[in-house]
Amino acid sequence: MAQKIEHQAAYILNRRAHQESSLILDVFSIQYGRLSIIAKGAMRSKKQWSALLQVFQPLILSWSGRSSLKTLIAVEAPSSAHSLVYERLFCAYYLNEILLKLLPELESNAVIFVAYADALQSLNDRTIQMELVLRSFEIELLTELGFAPDFMFDVHGNLILEGQVYILKPQNGFERVNAWAQQAILFDGETLISLQKREFHQSASFSSEISRTNFFRQSKVLMRLLLNHALGGRKIKSRELFSKIKY
Image (cartoon, rainbow, N blue to C red; front, side, top):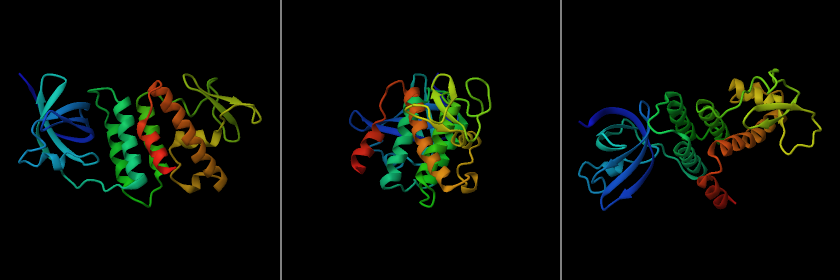
C-alpha cells in the first residue's frame, strides 16, 4: 500500500519537465529531508500547480508512493514567494545547488531546513549583507553534515587563540603556524573564533574594521575550501555562472 504523507513544510530546490505535461521536483522538506516528487499534469493542471511549484516559494506539500519517486497529491502556498533579483537571486540558486549536492536523500534535518528558510528571508532583505547570509548558511550546513572542522581546538587539542595564525588540514582541522610561515592560505585565530561563536553578524564582535574585513575575506576562502572538500571535486555551476555574468 502506498504511503501517504500530508501537509509537509517544504521548498523546491529544482524542477524539470517530464514527458509532455509533468514536472519532476527536487524537494527539501522539514520532516523527510530531500526527496524527488513527480507532479503529474502540473503544466496543464486546472489546479494551477505550475504557478505554485516554484523555487524559493514556501510550500505545504502532500504526496504518496512506495518507490523513491513520490507522487504529488496536493500543494498549498502559505505565503508569497521570496522576490529575489540580481546577485541575491544567484546566491539563492547557489544555496539550492549545494543542498542538492550535499544533502543525503530522505534524511530529515530541521536545523538545515530552518537555516535555509532564514537564509532566503535574509536574502530578501536588502539591508542584510549577502556575505553574512552565505557564511551563516554555509557554516550551519557544513557543521550539521559533519564537514566542518573544530573551530575551538586545533589538531593538537589546544585552544584556538586570537593573535595566532592557522592553516587548514581538511580532514583533521586547524594547525597553528608562525605568522611568517610560507603557506598559501593562512587563517587568523579571530576569524575561526568568530565562526565558532557565530557572532560575525555584529560589528562589535571585531576589534577593528580591518579584522572585520579580514574575516569576510578569510571566511569566504575557508568555506570554499571546506565545500570543495565536501563535494569531492564536483563543481558548483551556479558559482561559475555568476562569476561569468558579474565579471
